[in-house]
Image (cartoon, rainbow, N blue to C red; front, side, top):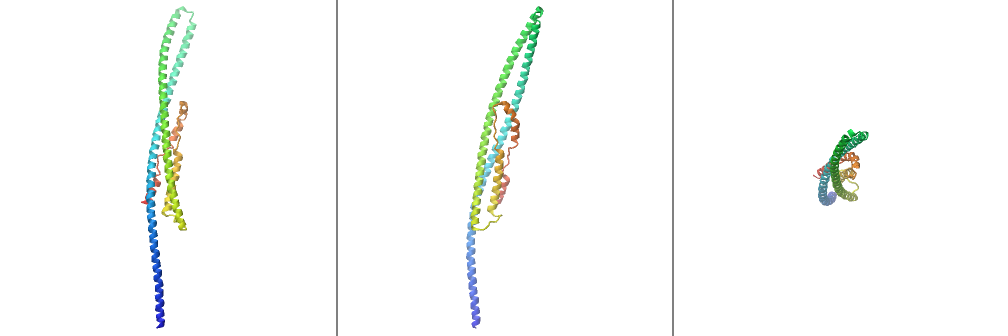
Amino acid sequence: MSSIEEQIKNIENKINVQEKKIKNLGEEIGELKNESSTIYEKLIRQKDVLLKKKETNILMEFKINNLKYESIKVTKSIEDTYFKIDSYFKELKRKKFEIKENIKRMEEINNIIKKNIFNDINIDRTFLILEDFLLKKKEHNNYLESFLKKKKEKIERVINEIKKINNNIFFLCQNITVLDNKLITNLYSIKNYINEEINNYLIKNEKINENSIFVTCLSIITKIIEKQKLKNEIVHINFNVNNSIQTTKNNNSQKKNREAKLELELNTQEFLEFENFFS
């Protein structure tokens, strides 16, 4: 009987040990549940913060897109104005050629007068022809002077208009730069926040899962920053219109090439990926 009692006692001791282990495991499971609940609540708060940041960045992207579109429209208006100026210069060249032709004819008539100076019969006729020619020349010169004056005034108005347009483009580019800088700053703030959370996690744990929420968020944010930095290098173009019309004509081809570099695409792919991640 004593042997059986000892066996029963040993079994009871083992049962007590197992019960203590089960109790300890239950306490550990409870602690893990509490800790996981705390981590889950923290992740929910982080998600709300990141969503607000994302909404702000998307609104800024749309503003930048509108400013770029306005810049393209203004650039197109400048090119049309350059075309008008070229037409004015062609017309002025044609009038200049007419003036040279008139001077040439006047010289020819003057030579005729010199040859017939001693011919009494042709003197009166020559003087009449010369007088008529000079009268017509004077009228024509008055017309040309008036025409050239009007064209000059038009060119001056066009130049002033170009200067105003150039100033508008400059301010548009400044606004784009400010918005781009704000966007990059917000993106870096999000990235730094995620890096800090990852570092805090690594202090408590030896490693982090590559597919975890922090690593995935960090990868998406990094893609957005790199693409935005690349766009900033392309978009920030200095539009300057020289006061000299000839210099403006020489730079016209460069302005056309710059238009092709303006982009209206948003970082929508990365933002959609970001949104799907939290959905």
